[in-house]
Image (tube, rainbow, N blue to C red; front, side, top):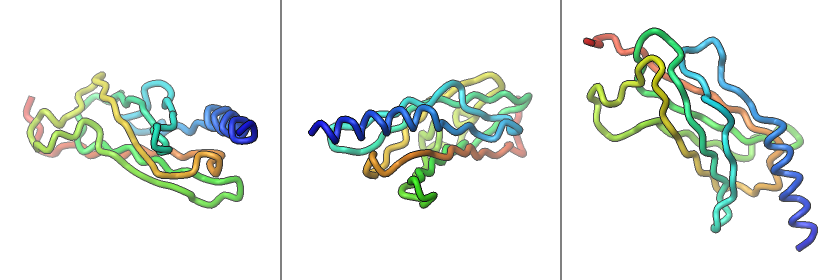
Length: 130
C-alpha cells in the first residue's frame, strides 16, 4: 500500500510538472491549469476550461487529451466537445472572451502516465449573424 501511495504521489507531481498547453496560435486556448484526479472507480479525470481569445465566435470546440508513458507510448486518449448540448444553435457558439468548462474521463492506470498532450480544435462559423 505504501508503494502504491508513493507511485500515486509521483504520478501527480509528474503530471503537474508536465502539463501541456494547447496551441497558443489559435483563438481558443486553455484558461488556467487542468485539474487532475482519480475517481473512486479508478478512472482519471481532467477538468479545466477554455477561453476564446479571438475576435470572432467559434463553434465545435473539442479538447483532446493524450496520455504518454515513460517510453513515449500512448497509453490513453479521449476527447470531449466543450459546451455540448446537442443543439446546433447559436448557444453552441463560444464568443470572444467567453469561457466554458470541460471534463475528460479515461480508464487508464495512473501510474503508467508520465506526461500528457492537450490539443484544442474548433471551427469558425461561416454564417454567423450577430
